[in-house]
Image 1 (spheres, rainbow, N blue to C red):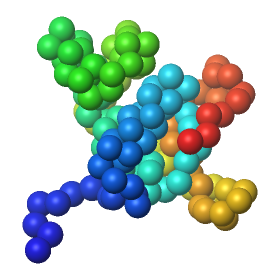
Image 2 (cartoon, rainbow, N blue to C red):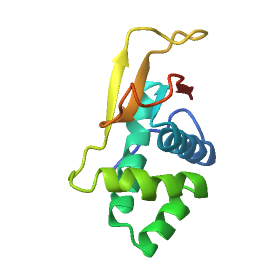
Image 3 (cartoon, one colour):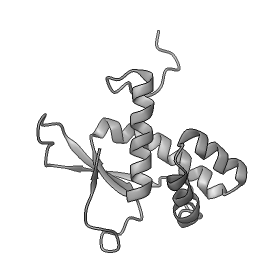
Length: 131
């Protein structure tokens, strides 16, 4: 039986799946907008939302918890110094997933744009990170 077994496997073993999700979360935090597949975006959203909630608290304990979940000091610093304060008054729902019609070259997989809800296209760089 499958009771209490949440999350998508993404056709990967545990270590590969955790590394993939950490990389997606890191790239989203650093670039604030990435292009990926719907399943990866939906699964990474769980991790990113929890990290932003930790960043909103801003305590030393929250920073250490974030570093244990996302071991990249540069990303965690940006998360706590820029992204957390931006969402201070928002009770949740920090990310959005926008489906796009253009499919990925090579395997024709559907793609989405995964971004923070307050992402400003005009203020950010024009290039997008692909994962």
